[in-house]
Image (cartoon, rainbow, N blue to C red; front, side):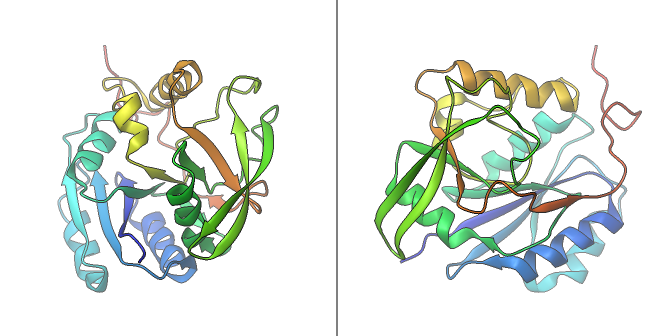
Length: 232
């Protein structure tokens, strides 16, 4: 029996990009269980969500909305809204380039309770991460090899990344939610530091194809612009 999975799209006013993201996800996600689709929106223009609901009515989207409170508050509200234990988190400008084997990621996370996250982004570029080859045995689909990211020896900060990843709620049950009232980059760095410094933090892993880039990062970034919320 496969558990339900939440697909949480984090968005703000990217009407062209998010459609490319959704189309690629529906074409590439490989999962035999039930998917629930959610939008965490930081107060896009008023027609933004209704048009998405209408165009993708088959996905039965639900949404949470924050009032330009930044990435941390937006994602926190979305996460707290979810009932599912497994969450695939993706921002609105990452277009998948190949199959997304959620079945393998779920099977690993269900079998290895010390893990909290499977990164799907392709970790190339995040150099100096140290990896250990391991196996998840007796899963629903047999033995699955995976690479655990070793937190202590890895010099790169971003063991955690906001890039696309599958997570179990035990991650934020232990680490807590994202810090709010920070710009986007600082929010990610704050969480990444907590991952590295928290002794009991669930571990991170990639699947056997998880090194090569798996998503095209499209569109103009809001980071550092007037659209990136500037808090005092």
